[in-house]
Image 1 (cartoon, one colour):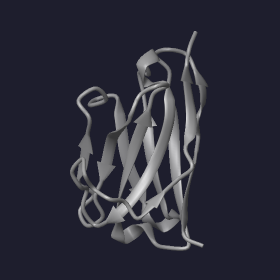
Image 2 (cartoon, one colour; image 1 turned 30 degrees about the horizontal axis):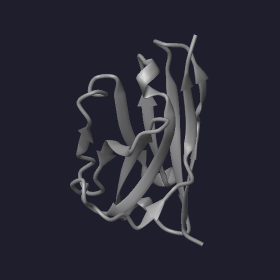
Image 3 (cartoon, one colour; image 1 turned 45 degrees about the vertical axis):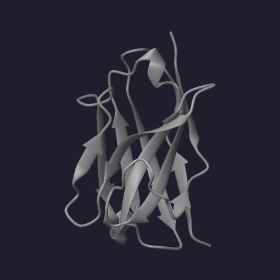
Image 4 (spheres, one colour; image 1 turned 90 degrees about the vertical axis):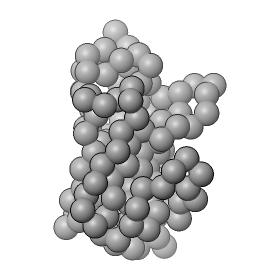
Length: 123
């Protein structure tokens, strides 16, 4: 069964760091663009970052540019989201999703979604 599984969430103090992982099983991430989405409590899910499959081209939402880094390890079938200098507004659920090759616009329809992982930013 093809699926994505996120891990690495948890509780961190403001200014701290976390690294989220998105591991694929049942298919190869090599041919997929992978995006990370953030859903704050009571708010809509929004795209945070995306990495394309062919040249590892990356995209970031303005609010995380310079603080978050997305990367991929095709040998491990994994995409990472390194989150530094975390703020209270970064708290919420994080989901990874896969779509063939290119990072789409806001209306993109993804083939695969993970179940999500919780990030809490609090002192």
